[in-house]
Image (cartoon, rainbow, N blue to C red; front, side):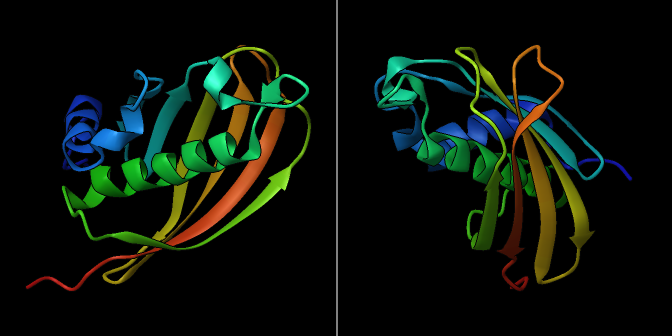
Length: 142
């Protein structure tokens, strides 16, 4: 299976349709895409921290959602109205004071729904800090 968009094309597309994502400076990056997969990075920055100095849940949720969206876009092309219909998170351990990596894998890609999972890792670490599953609704072609 070949991809319809490259990592750099997806990143440019996200810049166009979600410019607010980089308010205060860019910290989210599309590192790679492949068949039914995407890898994203969120750089460690103080605006992503919660009290206690760890990366916040909302930051991890955003990275997981973006990584799933990137994996879907890589397969179907630039469809702005592909939207999240559900996300579930299991926070497994405290992330380290470093960039966070999101590894997304689509488990099903149909005409109207995509289902996937994302593992979040502290950069350079093998143990997962968060596991997420999600479903996206894909609009009918017009």
